[in-house]
Length: 234
Image 1 (cartoon, rainbow, N blue to C red):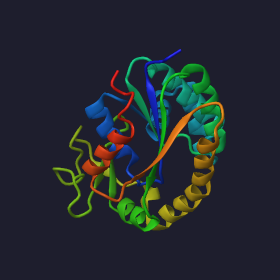
Image 2: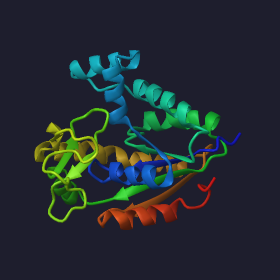
Image 3: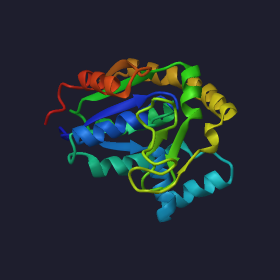
């Protein structure tokens, strides 16, 4: 059964621009974006059962389990399938266990959909530079991303204030250099395994490609549209 909704899975390290690219897709193409980080925060704020479990894991210094993250994502996807032309996943899956669970879900719910896997290519050093200048809207319902890098198109119009909702901007603790390098070290261990999983999958056809994101955002967006242009005009 064709769900009427295609799926785009972005694979890239923190700071590769997944959120910025996704925002352009939602604004100009009518897609829906899933950010697992934002979704976790919404569940925690709403005190849902999933949110309570996530909050407990975080406060206990534990990683949120793959099964819990997958349950949260599948619940969100169920509400989008058939209602939008495409869904773009930003930050999920991150592990083989998550990818396998999602694969089982897709076999049932999105059998005839096109499923694109796009690796965002960028060097670790550029990631460190980018994240060092990254700031986020402090409003949990917004979470718009900005950059204070000279010449960036993501500089806020008013210093340290969100253009979208007017809340103050803040910096994540994990955007300090040492934390960034540790995150990259962990991320790089998983990325190739994920790519191998999608390239070698037997039961689901994944359209795997690569996108250079060490360029201006409008150029990246245009090339992404070319990669997924067929089959999204529903």
